[in-house]
Each structure stands twice: as structure tokens, then as C-alpha cells.
Amino acid sequence: MPPVYVTRQGAKLRVQNRRLRIELPEQELASIPLAHVSQIVLFGNIGLTTPAISALLSKNIEVVFLTQSGSYRGHLSGMETPHVPLRRAQYLRLGDADFILEMAKAVVIAKLRHQRALLQRHNRERDDPEIASAIARVQAGLEQAPRKRALSSLRGVEGSAAAAYFSGYRRLFGEEWHFTARQRRPPPDPVNAMLSLGYTLLAGIASGAVSAVGLDPFAGFLHNLAYNRPALGLDLMEEFRPVVDGVVLRAVQAETICPADFRLVKGDTPSGSVRGVLMNDESRRRFIAAFEQRMDTAFTHPVQRRKLPLRQCLLEQARQIRQSVETGTVNYQGMGFR
Image (tube, rainbow, N blue to C red; front, side, top):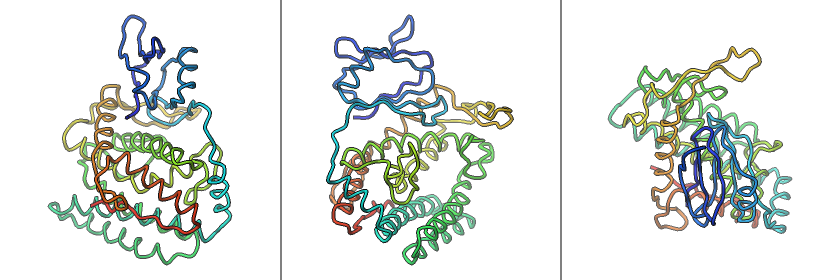
């Protein structure tokens, strides 16, 4: 089941008669059977009653808190059943430099293949020489990654390939979007704002998939360990980042989202001098709907060899990571998006 997203500022969530109710002071926005709620994602100023918190914890329904612009703030979750032997093996792998490198290579290669495929697909009719150059540089990264013998060198290849990829990706947008490069904090243009929101949603799904198979989402291999950073969830999502890129591109091309749906705001710096853009509530709902529709799209999984919703594909990829952790041999097969 997809998460329940709440974007209406000032709304309050309560649980009554085994239903999740989303309300404004004088209006009920939604009423959903609690049995149909897998996760709740709150944007900005959304309230939770104490009984609702208690009910959600008892049902082990995670609540994710984001800022109004979509940046991660934290989450509320019930008690997890620990998978002690599996997690012991996971922590042991963190001390195995060879395993870390091979796992990181598998993640990076899967991601670069997907980025290459997206650019190739959208350049077939355009025949844009700058996009063709970007594809060639991503391909060079694909050829270099397997030969790297140090994690730092592999990350360098990934960084160079990412810069090349976005130099091609930006060519798919008109000048009215003011998109010149990938920038995050704060996003200076509508495309970056949509990418950041989409990656945040994807990171939540990936971290949930990692937890679902019993792994610790905070103990990753490609991403550095850091307090409150779901490094393994971020490792898993790397291959799927171009899914978000495609959602953004389709929203723009179909005019589901337009530049007028964004407003310029001051940044979070003490001086307030840094500026970014923020989506309005209605455009955010449309974007989330497009994202969820994509997550429900079926793809052929390379191991299962059958069509599965993209959300389930993430779970199957997490199972591949688990198997690699258990055996000590990396055997991660990328989705092979085309």
C-alpha cells in the first residue's frame, strides 16, 4: 500500500473507531481505515493527537516528518523486531574493505546504467550532441568503475559521471525552467525542487525496504556512516534515482507542473540571503500523485523474472543486498532499466 501523504498546512491527524482522520478545524479532509495505512508522510505544519500517536505506534505504522519543501526531519516508529544474526553479519561486512568496495561497485554500476538509459531514450529523436557527449562520459564511468581498487576512487568516478549525466539531463528542459545544474540546499529552481522532493520520497521507500528485509538502514557501504543518516537506504536508492528524474521530466513535458507553481523564498541561513524555490500545495499533490503512479508501474525484475510494481522491485533489490551480506559474496544484479 502506498503511504498516506498529508500536505495541507494546519491539518491534524487523529485516530477514531479504527480510522485515520485528517481534519481541519471545521472540515474533514479524509477518513481512512487504519488497516489500509502502511506509512504516513507529513509535510510541514501538520499535527498529531496523542491518542493517534499511541495507536500508530501500536500498529507499527511509521510517521515520516518532512519540512514543507520536502526535506527530511525525522520519523516516528514502533518497536522493531531485531534480526540479530543478520545484523551481526552486516556489521562484520563493514570491516571488510573488499566486500564494501564490491558492494559499492555494484550499486554505482547499476545507477550509471540507468542514467545512461534515460539519456539514450530521450536523445533518440533529439540527436542533441551535448546529450550524446554526456552519454559517452557516463559510459566512460561505467568502464572505469569495475577497475577501481579504492572506495575513494570509485566515488570520484561516480561524481564525474553524475556531473556528466546532469549536463545532458538539463538539456531536456526549456529555458523557462532555469535549470543549469543539480543543486540541493536550497534548490534554486523548480526542477531542482522537484528532484529534491522526489529523492526524499524515494529515500523513505528504500530505507523501508532495507528495514523490511531485516537489515540496518543506517549501516551502508557506498555512503559514509553518519548519525541519523540511512546510509544503506541511500545505497539502495542510487539505482532508482533516474526514476525520479523521469517523473520530473514527464511532469514538465505533460505540463502537469509549470513554472508558475513555484515561488521564491528566503533560505534558512541566519542572514536569509540564500534563496530557493518552493512548490505550492496543489502542485506538490500533483507531483506526489505522479510519483506514486510511477512506483506502481510494473517492471520485469531480473532475478524474479516477472513483472513487479516498482515499489516491490526495491524490496527485491534489498533482498539481494541481504543475500550478499549473509554469504559474504556480492551478487547484486541491477534492474537493467531501458
